[in-house]
Amino acid sequence: MRIDIVSVLPELLDSFFAHSILKRARDKQLAEVAIHNLRDYSTDKFRRTDDYAFGGGAGMVMTIEPIDRALEHLKSLYSYDEIIYTSPDGKPFNQSIANELSTKKNLLILCGHYKGIDQRVRDHLVTREISIGDYVLTGGELAAAVMSDAIIRLIPGVISDETSALSDSFQDNLLAPPVYTRPAEYRGWKVPDVLLSGHAARIEQWRHDQSLERTKRLRPDLLDGADN
Image (cartoon, rainbow, N blue to C red):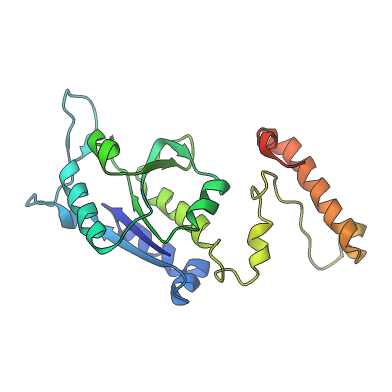
């Protein structure tokens, strides 16, 4: 998989992809992430990528020309399955979308900034808009990083134990069950006996029951789509 990210502040993303699982994915050549500076595609002598909004109002707007130039250049090199714009009014990002996008070959993520982006970009140049939550960030770099992390970790071979990703929260619209490790007792706090029983079927049933109970208590909104 290849993910290209277009940003006015690419340095914000450099460190994020240089560590942990994402770094291992890149080292194994299972995922390639390239970060592009939108200012490189500006024809303005000051490399500006924003301007005042027509009709007035507070805040600056990302201009269409450098974005179009950047996308045209990248599309001449790669065929993208999706061109994603990070936007607070996009479709909420969830595990189902991460699963879907992890099967794609090439993705391009355009990071929003300022007051917003020229609407013509949204109308004609991107294929989908995604939000990571009902709040506004200074820019879309964090959203691009979050989406990339959630997507890349699902690629076969990225995580050593691939079944671990399949048992994560939200994979079946249920939260993950509690987990424990050694010691079996600490300060009088004990691990549930069933987990020490070695009885695989009982353990699996306990985990499902705990997932269901935890979801009912903490995220009942998820149960509409849960297989319970």
